[in-house]
Length: 449
Image 1: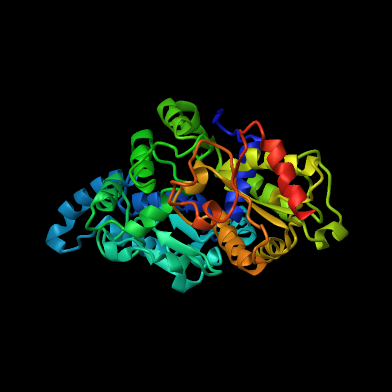
Image 2 (image 1 turned 180 degrees about the horizontal axis):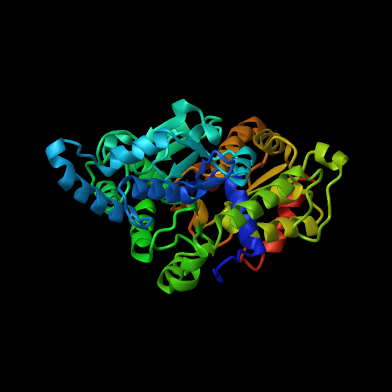
């Protein structure tokens, strides 16, 4: 799979959009997306602003390139000032600088959070106040303080509001209470790896999520450590599909071949500019959800308003990883004369998603769950909610056949704990790869005709 710079193919864009709708995407916001508003109306990058102010304050002949250089200046300053008692540290100085500054985020970032509701957003920045800029309530902020008590509760992610989680502390006057230098980052990640201080629930939640790493421009070795930590101690992709998107500076994309190769191996696409990726994401997402009618993936046919009001014969439920094969199953039912609800085709994108889904499950003649390795993965997946709704609906159908599972790969549904017993003991399972698959589909259609 081509994971080159600035390349996301149509299929992966579709998977990403669907992952957002399933609430499986976690953005990670870095300092490169945060700005300081200047008196003349210009906005400057927060890191560049702080480094410039620190360099001026400690009388450096040039602007320091990183915070470690500033620490050297402060140590020399403290050595000179110790007799006067005027000692300081970089954490207090940064707090003092930003406490007087006006923090802003670009409009394209605000638009992203206006369009999409993400259950969880992470930030690697220590800048306070970005929650309000992104429309996140103040009571939905959590800060990792190198203690397990800073863990999340999964129930906190179920509401309508987004949670903002500071991965590496946030701004305060206390020394080392937030990440400034690379040494600080290593210290935080060490605590993340320590079983006594790790936020376990957060780590488990992130392990199978699609990550959008936006504005975090780490060097190769440090990014690998960061990715390994956030992905729950594994860098082996769970599938061949794209696992995330990382935005990096043009300079790093062109010069850091080792980092580009690593990201390719972990099925992660790279964009040179966060702004370019977010703008394209916003445009695609807005277009997808502003259509009056959904266009079919299989040939571009549309569904009339009358058809949307009618009950469908077949409801196809599937994991997003199985999109293409699930589409082939849907097309087979269609070719044999059944009307099919296949959400990327049939869903009117102006409707309220969950309400429409629940209605179609209740109205359909057959609920067809697609069973595969992807459906065995643990975690919060929307298709599992569809399964639960269908099992509840089956109770009202008495002895009438209602659930018709289809296996699309080599799993044994009768021995997998992740497959509901209602699918294996109370329903007839058919297999997509079976040479009699079409005959079995015809029997399903005849049973309700």
